[in-house]
Length: 179
Length: 141
Image (cartoon, rainbow over all chains, first blue to last red; front, side, top):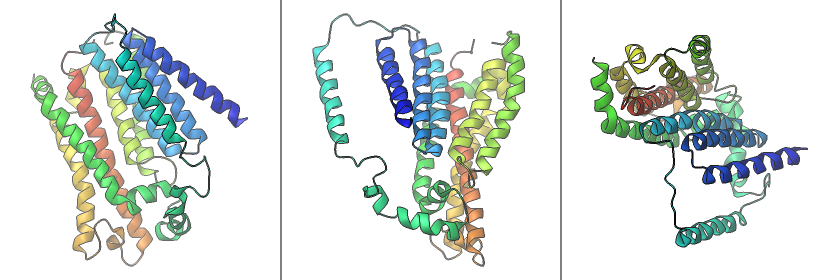
């Protein structure tokens, strides 16, 4: 049963990806990307990664779509059509795509108990986090405490991105705010 | 969308629950899915929705750009500051046991609470700043 849902969702995603790449209306393409993100959020939910699914639905489907639409309102809604066929681009895409697929062949199977990710410290987190943290959600204790330093780095990345945008565009919105 | 009735009314109904849900996700991350990252984005989404309905100028009267700029940095400061507090109390950087050495899980709860709050503040402020940056270049229709 789960396989059928997986297959349906993944084929939807493939169809959407092809549709987005062939679409000339950028407004519709942005909306389609939002639907694509929602579908991948559902796939994450099926993989029991609810925290990732949550983030994907909020960031991928929500905020990214709004930012894409905001960008489109500043530029144009129609894509410029390239007339000539670019054989070099096709070649690059094919090589990159096959390299990525070749890379997945080495990955462990889904749920494989011997996968490297399950061999290192994961066991300790699962066994000890209950008594050390007394927090039911292990994802939170790993993210905020065991790997707190990494998360500090992530927040700093977001901070840097925000500072960059404020430096580039901030003078406009501050000036308008004073009116 | 300033003159469209249905989005205005639906928005007025939906924005408070969205803000409340963001706070729920923020402070309930210990027990269920969620945490600072998701909560920040949901909070920002409520502000974005408000901007889309009522316009940028109206939003800026509530969400002042100057405050957003401060909040962007405040979240990171809160996070790193929590780490520094544990450092000065004689423990490792970001070792929340320092916050309550008598009962380590309680210290962990407090530390995770503060750190997630810092994440939430920075993420929400950065998302709002990016959106304002884009939306402010030309008035939203």
